[in-house]
Image (cartoon, rainbow, N blue to C red):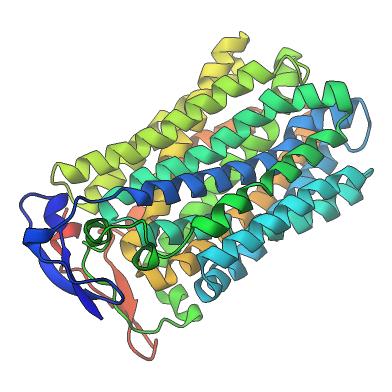
Length: 468
């Protein structure tokens, strides 16, 4: 056990430094402090790449859906809703287990195993020829992909102080959009020259390259030779987390847990609708094939990427100006919830680029909202359970996505003859509902722990960091 300087003053000139014990770190005195390295941003880059691969693998089917439905007659709209619902429910159940699994096995090994599994499963899409076949493969893909976001949240909790986590989550969230952008940029060429199966083969194989980067590079901050004592001090500059054991089921006794889970239950289905059904909507509304819809989809998801970064930057900038976590996070989320309201009118827009701009604003606002929603977990919970809480939220989120996917297929394919109006009305108002629920259940974003035996919740709300 060695002592290092915790330099909270590196990010807040009004705060003082203090010495804390960190295992395996050499002694560091204020007068000999070395310049802080920035290796945490390299780790963030790896998580960004992993998330990009994650979304490429899951997005290929949605992009190809209009052709697989109309040209190859492999499934109908209603069946596509069930196929996507199968992915979502398996993803939800997988997240219920993956968070706790990652807390147990660790990020380095767990994330690598997950990515190898989902890349392999993505390749297996090439053997599917029926709606049932696609459903079975999507079930396995959902389970394999489910550890991605719990792993991202846990990595941010280990490598970043609170004041940088929203920016970090914005970068991670932008990986979902970059993956969505790369699919329409790459897949049309593959399909036109090598057939639709090549899209799954190439994206799945490409994901395995990430393992070459992750396995040699990733270590915990205190174990990493590329992290200077000064950077480690910055990473550890927040007040230390409680060391009490947290039984898994006891997490459900916290209103903070339910705030996150319900927020995900409401908003994840809407994002899944954007990602899965936009290609089909653009084909119906504007008669675009997979080649012509590439640029509109790229613009939409570029806007989403900008929204992801902007949402994280907004709350982080407010914190740097002296606002507490509660005010900063919720201000950003409320702005995003309001910005998404205009998408309820998109079905009345008949010009392509007007549609693109409205859909782009909706996806950008979602990503800004989501970046701050994810950071609520490390804001309110100690590091040892961040992956578990994130996994529970993912379970609720994709459980909702499964139901909404099936409902979307029925509405579009059977009940309204292709009318998307009611779906965009739901998508436009859901974020305000989620914001209200979060405000009711976690009005001040107080940190939460359980007692040693895990018998009852204990709320710690004395920190100035959470004053409104």
